[in-house]
Length: 88
Image (cartoon, rainbow, N blue to C red; front, top):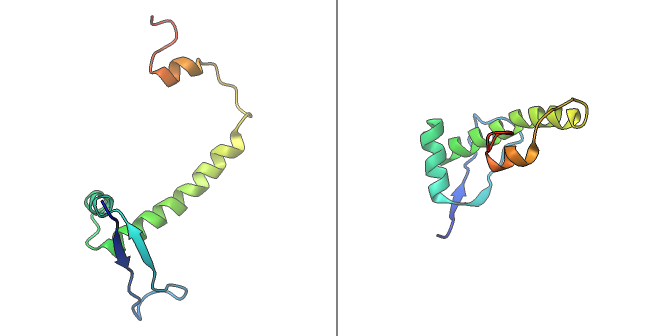
């Protein structure tokens, strides 16, 4: 499936720094994002998705800073395989 071109119009009510952008996006994915988020337009769905990504970015950065700093007792192979240690 060929992605659709999405025009994000600029209105006088939008914040400074916003501009018109053309994106090639998957129509099905945008429709799903609209359903999940309740967005009424493609522009709103893209805006919500970008804001969510940025908001979560600080959480991911905080987790990355903890890498190697916390004790963990577990079996990575069992976790990846979906089985629990000692459940065989």
